[in-house]
Image: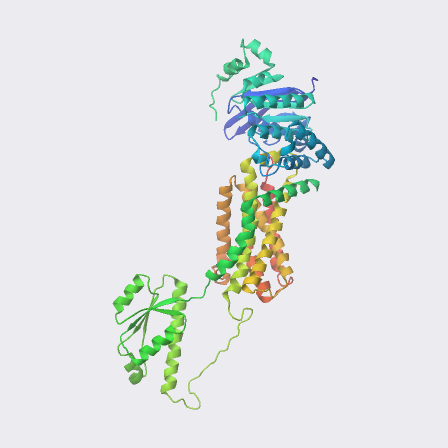
Amino acid sequence: MTNNRIITANQLTKIFGGFKAVDSISFDVHEGEIFGFLGANGAGKTTAMRMLCGLSMPSSGSATVAGFDVYKEPEKIKRSIGYMSQKFSLYEDLTIKENIRFYAGIYGKSDAFIKDKTAKLLQQLHLGSEANKLVRSLPLGWKQKLAFSVAIFHEPRIVFLDEPTGGVDPVTRREFWNMIYEAAASGITVFVTTHYMDEAEYCNRVSIMVDGKIEALDTPSALKRSLHAASMDEVFLKLARKAVRSGD
Amino acid sequence: MRTLKFLLQKEFRQVFRDPAILRMIFIMPVIQLMILPWAADYEVKNIRLAVVDNNHSDYSRQLISKVTSSGYFQLQHYSSSMQQAMQEIEADKADLVLEIPAHFSKDIVKEDEASLMMSINAINGVKANLGGAYLRSIIQDFNREIRLRWIQFPRFNPELNIETTSSNWFNPHLNYRYFMVPGILVVLVTMVGAFLTSMNIVREKEIGTIEQINVTPIHKYHFILGKLIPFWVLGLFVLGIGLTIARLVYGIVPVGNVATIFCFAALYLLAVLGLGLLISTYTSSQQQAILLSFFLMMVFILLGGLYTSIDSMPAWAKAFTKINPVSYFIEVMRMVVLKGSGLWDIRYHMLTMAGIAVVLNSWAIFSYRKRA
């Protein structure tokens, strides 16, 4: 792992009306790491992630993603990242192949690249025989794995995953995390939000957000040590109990 | 350019996979054009007439048979009681009461002057007006007939008599459908343009795919063009279907060049698509988009000269028709289809429509944001 900082955030803040959704958070993400972004519902994780992806304009503070400024160069950022939102975002009325082709196409990938990589991907996912089926007909676990594959299909430097395993069964979750490891091994930095504390253990470093602020940021083992907790679950409960805000 | 290709491919695939859109494109024009022109008709027919005959003479009977044989009236009630006839009106069973006084035939013969009484149910103003006018002219006709029978005219009529001969241009048989069908075609094209476009974009907001699009480096112009082009094509396609139905079912063959219509429609659709896009940027669910489009369509159509003449509107409404794209297309349709106007005759309409298109689209593109 290199210590290149691929994401930097400094006093990043988002205010909706009078409500500070994200309250001057500062952190760095190193290139190639799996960075867990934890927090209760409504803690501000998604808002922070949306600012980094160029979907939401920060109210104040600064941030760079892949070396580009979130205020001035959002389109350059978008070229370097992949994003998988909380909502399932493939087209259900297109087939698996068509979805892959569409998203790869709008990232400007060549036909040869798309064709080669689609074949490989379908084989990896064991979806070869289903390639021409509408996405609508797939079970949720498969959809999530496919959405993740599509999010990194154009070989971005960073991928942002917003609760990618919500509602997915434990076996599929395990497979999903294998895919995340593979992506990280191929050099993609993974920025992932989650509610599952067992998943937090898989991350290189985690940050825990409470009421719009980052309360803790370290490796899982260091966090457990400093808070005298046996598991990440306990770490999370100790920190999140301080929350004043109620979940959404 | 390549990005656009991928967008168009996706849009067309989705359109042709959506049975609701296909139904709207193929069945809606057929039904609207097959049914509406027959029902939406200004001509007043089947006026229900109640006659109060207190005279029971040859003359009164002749008058009644003349009225009923005109084809506009149905004899609903016949009695010698005004009270009974008014009850018919109150129960909305009759539209018009003609009261013939007891001394009607005596007056004609002896006094050379007789009077009749007409009572009209004026809830429906148009029907009342026209019904009264028809009846009046039938009675006048009747009047002339008996005068001819009674009076030997001198060789030179001492009364001044101005004869009017009229000739109907562009729609010689005053066929109402010639007037309505081009207008309904406009409504169809507008529905496809504004409704479908706004719903399509808002749907992507609802299911969340728009966020996925917004996080890609795709340029917003590309995304918008990718949305507009398919519906532009579909709009022209629906117009083609509509013109074909107009020809096959109603025998309406445009006097002018069909290419002129398509030329204007191409421009018109740009404006309407811009409107649909604008609606989608201000709404976040398909329900909102439908309600807003529906409201706007009602206003545009009712103040667009489809059913009522723009010339008889008050000044403020007339001013509104100047910025109402629907009224321009309806006018152009009627000009080209009925009068045979060419591109040069509709240059003013073309220019204005281009202006409206530019304004609506710039506004829509300006308010479309990839980042909140």
